[in-house]
Length: 272
Image (cartoon, rainbow, N blue to C red):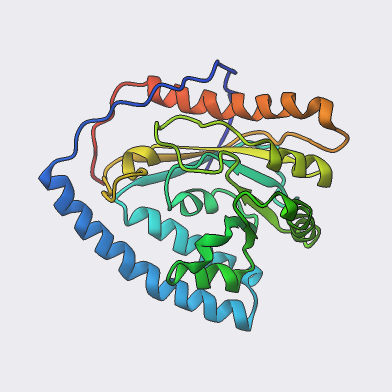
């Protein structure tokens, strides 16, 4: 883990899709092998964690969860590192707002800090084989798609989690990117952060869009995955008038990280 030093500038949001090289037959064969290795790791690791969730509780097996998530990223053939702002307090719960790229997003960022991070996931995801049971055993907070009447209950569940000392992992775009860039952020989770006075940590993961992206089942190995956890942004004492400014501040940090990454020359896949 390294320490974040330079704060990214706030650029205008670039909505142009990122152009990537087409996949080849070799890519498909390699991806099939990586999927096999990943599933072979995921199955027994999730089963072990679920058993321990019931017996000792999820908060007492953080070492195992970090091992699992780091291993899952390693098995995509990626090299991983975290760049963490020194202002992030290991003893303080936060709302980690992360850009949404693929189904491994939580694995990509989980080990970046020592916080226990409770997930906030669409209720429909709880029907997924293995993963749905895992989320239930861990206490993941469900969100009903488009159910505004559930907003108060969701806010209360999130507040209760933070009062227990748990941080929250949230994807403010609400859906995975199809362009490789940051999508439109949704105001609802920002309002909840304001109402419960939760500090927001902008989390930007770069490189993962090259590894795996929406609309494709291929895993592409050999790229660098970097997790940027930037300086916490306080919400306590802010209200409706500050909502737009708060959203723009978070958007600026995350967009800056992504645009800096895409402005670099096209990296070639490398092996360990």
